[in-house]
Length: 501
Ligand SMILES: Cc1cc2nc3c(=O)[nH]c(=O)nc-3n(C[C@H](O)[C@H](O)[C@H](O)COP(=O)(O)OP(=O)(O)OC[C@H]3O[C@@H](n4cnc5c(N)ncnc54)[C@H](O)[C@@H]3O)c2cc1C
Image (cartoon, rainbow, N blue to C red; front, side, top):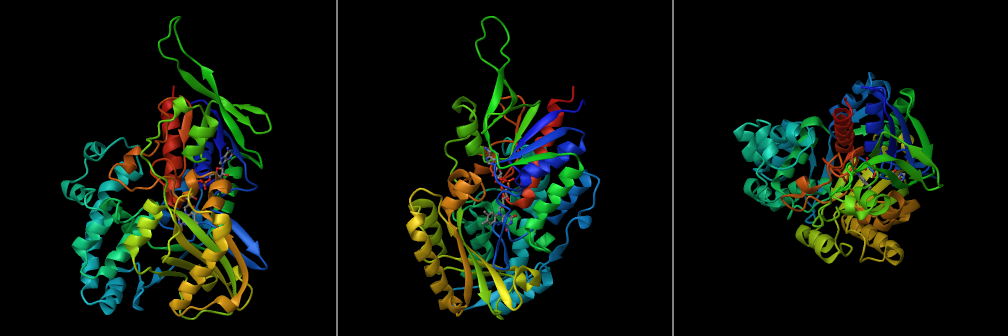
C-alpha cells in the first residue's frame, strides 16, 4: 500500500489514536485542532496550585491503551504510569448506608455481604451473567464494525453468551432480576451513565460496562489523566505526525467523481479540508474526530448525513472543580452520593430536560492518590452531576445557584465543605457544547436509550463519501477513553482495506 496523505480533524483521544495507528503504517498525517492543545474532552485546568482533570477521571480497560502503544512498537509503561485503585469507589446512599466497591471479587462480595446480607451472592451471579455478555460482545461489537444484531450470530458467538446479550430487559430490569436490595439495583443502574444513558431505558447488555470495570480494574494515571493526552501527542510526534492548533476546519472539500454522460446519481469523494483561515489542505482521506453532529451539520451538506433522527444526545454533565483547604478523612479517591429517587433523576434529565433537583453526586479527589495534584495539606475535588442535554436550562443564570444546591446536598450527607473552598470553577453542559462542539453538550455522543441505539450510531466509515472516516465518541463503538481508542483503530482498519490497491 502506498503511503497516503491524511488529515485528522480534532486532537481528541480518538483522533490521536487514529493518527498514531495510521502513522505507524507509514502514512503522512496532519492533525488540525481548533483548541490550543491535544485532548479534547480529556483536558486540564490549573488554578492557584490545584491541578484538575476537567474531563475523564477514571481509566478502564487498560489493555486497550497497551495495544495502542504496541501498534506503534512502543510500551505503555515508558510513557505513562497507571495506578490501580482499590477500592474502586465508595458508595453512599440517601438512607445513610454505604459500601466500598472492589475490583477483587472475594473482597467485593465480602463488602456487599456486610452492607446487605445476600448482596454479595447476588453480585456474584450478576457478574457471571455480565461476563457472558462481555465475551459475547467484545469481538463482534467493540472490536468490529457492526451493522446489526445479526453480526453477533455471524461472528459465531456461543449460544450461552448470546443469551446474556439479549437487550431486553433494561439495565434496571436486569438488576431487578438479580438483586433483592433496591440499593443494589441503583448501584448497577449507574453503569448506564458510563454510556450517557438512563438505566430505565438502556438495554441490559450494558452489564458489560460494569464487567469491564470489575474484571480489568479501575485506574488512575500518575500526574493526572491529562498525561494520557501528553503521552499520545509525544508518541504521535515521534511517528512524524504534524499538529496544528488554534485553527478549526470549516468544511470538507469534495470532488465530483460521477461517471458517464447522463449520471442518475452523483458520486463524490473527499478531496481535503478547508480551514477557518481560508487555507486548503488536499488529502487522500480525512478522519474526523469531531462530533458527528458537527461533521454532518457544519462541515458537510445535509445529503451526506446518515444519522438516524431518533438518536438522542447522551447525558451531559455539570462539573465543579474545587480546591479545598484541609483533608477529608471519610472519602476515597472516587465517591458516589446517590440521589433518593434515581428514576426521577433520569426522568428530569431525558424527559423534562431540566436540572436534577436531587442529583447523584460523583466526587473524585485525585490528590488522595497523588499529592502532586494539590498544594500541601489541600485537596482537588472534581464534582460531577448528571445533567440534561442543552436546550431548556439557562445555565448562565442557573450555574451558581445549582452549584450551591450540590454543596448543600453534600452537607446533608455530613460532608460540609462550604467553608473550606479556596478555588471554585464551574463547567456547565453549555460550556461542553461550545468548547468541544458536542451534540447538545453530550459527554458520550448519543445515548444508548433504546435497543437499537448501538446499531444506529454513525459507523467509522462514511457510506456516502469515499475517503471519509470517523473516530470518536459519537461514532461506533461509543464514548469513553478506551472506546474512542477502539474507534480510531476501526477507522484506520477500514481505511487500510479501502486503499489497499
Ligand atoms: C466531564 C466528563 C467526564 C468524563 N469522564 C470519563 C471517565 O471517567 N472515563 C472515560 O473513559 N471517559 C470519560 N469521559 C468521556 C471521554 O472524555 C470522551 O469519551 C473522550 O475523551 C472523547 O474523545 P473523542 O475522541 O470523541 O474526542 P473529543 O474529546 O470529543 O475531541 C474532539 C476534538 O475535535 C476538536 N474539533 C471539533 N470540531 C473541530 C473542527 N471543526 N476543526 C478542528 N477541530 C475540531 C475539538 O476541539 C476536540 O478537541 C468524560 C467526559 C467528560 C466531559
